[in-house]
Amino acid sequence: MAYTCLVVDDNEIERDAIEMYLRKINCFEIVGVCSSGIEAASFITNESIDVVFSDIDMPELSGMGLLKNIKNPPVFIFITSFTEYAAEGFNLNALDFIVKPATYERLLKSTTKAIEYLDLKNSVTQQVFADPPPAPENYFFLKETKGYTRLNYDDVIYIESMGDFSKIFTATNKHITLVNLKNLEKQLPATFLRVHKQYIINLNQIATISTNEIHLNHDHTVPLSIANKQELMDKIIDKTLSRHTKKLL
Image 1 (cartoon, rainbow, N blue to C red):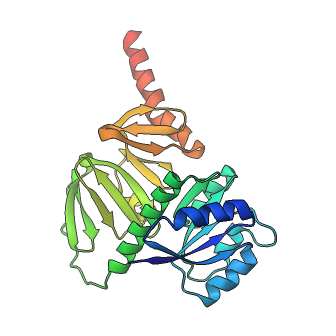
Image 2 (cartoon, rainbow, N blue to C red; image 1 turned 180 degrees about the horizontal axis):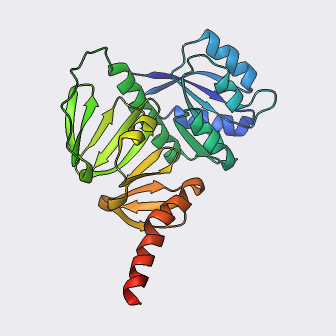
């Protein structure tokens, strides 16, 4: 299945580069290329668009403004030179945020995420499920399109936001649930912590922590945002050092 997409950027060179990369990806059909947010707003109103690849810093109507002013917007993937826009972009439920200059490899990763999200969204049907049985503390029931799957909390490595859905990673599999990250976060035990707008990790699965990344067991890596870093350090590193210090005194 081919998904329709729109490219929006006021810079002709960067606009052409994104268009060239997207034409190499078979699952996407470029139905429009716009040089401004105003032009894109009109295009989206009159055409059926699945994914918008948009710059943010544009005159008159920014990419953020474009997303805010569309009722029932398509999937948005922002491509910009300004990393400070990332937090606001994720708050608006943008699916991804690519820092310029966008490479083919990075764009391919983003489009794969978009395809997975759209495929799941299209597969969701209105089904009535019975309430799952109450879950003991060591496991929970995960609502998927096929029904309910039981997962152990300890087996979960991390959870990634996919807009209205969430992707849960274990050592042997990944599961997609019809629950957004915000609602999942409310139900998780204290061993889980949000470390980025799009990621929640199992603290027991941490291998190492670097400046802006967290390396988890089974070769998984997730980004660590500045906004969430201090809470992680307070909860994990500082307490661990404190305990060790007390033992030495």
